[in-house]
Image (tube, rainbow, N blue to C red; front, side):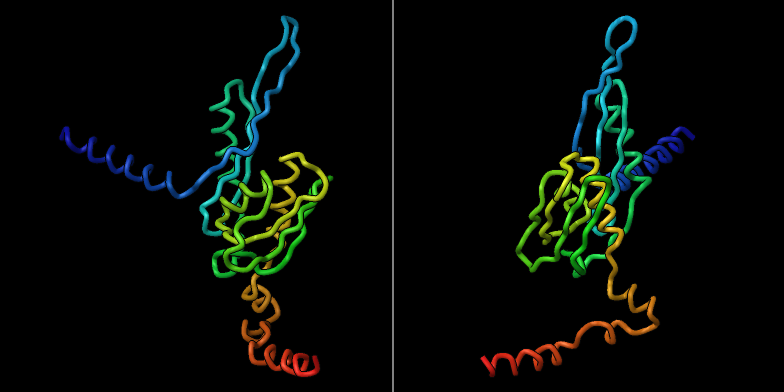
Length: 195
């Protein structure tokens, strides 16, 4: 009888071990905030965390607490609750160029060929790394506030649509929507002959 609780405990521990590696998280910003009270100042910490499974799901969260680890834990929990799924082309880049906006933050994200890598700054890079994007060119125009940059990036990623979702919406097949490679090659041939 003494073995049974241990076995159950091991199973629970095993489940936790399986859940932990499922999501990777990245601390983007930590900010010390103060509240002035009668006796002086009380300091707290605000954390901004991006969480993702590196297979097309990403989310961000913010947390505030008196201690840094607690703020990070709260932010991570919030990020896991607010995750979104983003369709990726070949599991490495975006399907099309997109713009995202939030407040004064504006970001431009462009699809890129294999081997380009992640060309993006600070908070945007964290989002792409947690999302699992390998090739992307991105630029932040406007607010440099990490909160607004991440919200603008997430806003843009939510607008992205895959050929499959567009085909389903229009009641067509994916092959009907995508340009055929033979047609594209024929269109290019006359141009090269003229030149």
